[in-house]
Image (cartoon, rainbow, N blue to C red):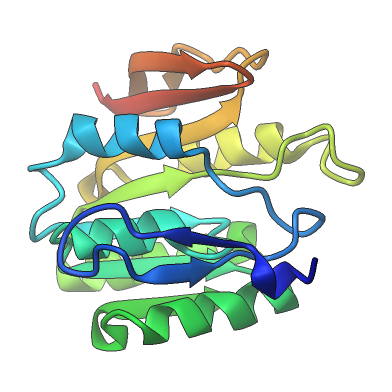
Length: 196
């Protein structure tokens, strides 16, 4: 099976049933349907007219679901070449005018994203789904992710959501942010952080 044969649908909203391609599993890891459903049930009305940032976007399925459900702008961040190609194809099926793509390393590009939000005076939802740290070369990914969260200025943040391996202990406080809640789905956990 070619990577371009793997697909998932947008679940709800104005782009419901649009088919999104997914990059190969060796490149990225798609969020489980149950995780996606729980997340959007949690923030369903808050997402309307909000700015949404999807870090480590992969196919962009979370950000495009947010767009479908009424987000006014979605910022995607991805560095993998194959994933970027698929991400752009997926965006083309929705509303490209409401999407921005930052290609390259998320840890480097986050500064430019923050600057753009500050310039527009906007707060955003940050959905962070880094590659699991069991992958080769990713051993320090969570340490870097926690440092990234601590560096986010609170005037830019509405809510931070981390999708992570369930065995990981996320500190109760990271910079200006505290854990609001965590929800476990087998090997995957969603942790929500907000400003204290």
